[in-house]
Picture (cartoon, rainbow, N blue to C red):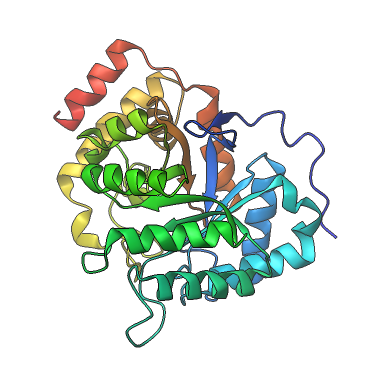
Length: 329
């Protein structure tokens, strides 16, 4: 039986999520790509247990995480049953619905039929009565937003989740969705956008909306799928995401321009006493509205290195200016 380290909360930093009572770890673990059926169970177990032992209390999932879709939740459910069930109340577990899960007209997007059915399936896969956060994973251009928000509220009032959130909504969509939820008597806890040094779209209005509405932000892909590490400094390794069959990064996106920028950023990081990955995480966490960042991992060592970002989250004006200059902003 797994026994968590007794000092697991001493090194981790936590931050309140928007205008709520919920504290999240500054670094959360996402089970997007390396925790599904194609990964040996013991490797997934080792990473999740190591993360929890380091004070990472938030584990981010979605119905389609794997591959194959659904298998990450199955893996996590097995972990909960075998190792982590004594610690359920010390954990924040989130899942989402919004991408394709099954054939036919009810297995995708944002209808109430799909979202509630999907959550029921997620709970069954994980062996849970409720998740802490249930997200709509992406806005649906065909379904009225009121219906998608009603699905979130229904799940909340049925006791199948404690909080609701949005993901991949732009600033205008977010403001409208948050307003609809408010009219239904529910506060939107959190928004999960893609955000990194190489992808700064949230700065064009979304973070302003989140601040105004008291909604927290948790960034995914803060390392730009590995491009903000030293992984691609000397070409594309065969065992990397860009070198394999990952749906999130192909070789064409690892451009010479981005590699050159990453090398220049690495010099700034070295001067700060950090790895490039650590500085990239710290840069996202430095933003006022960012509650947490979601890291992925394929081995325990990556988790340990990323946690080192917490040792230096402060930036001087000169450092921020140098980073902006490298990025061309």
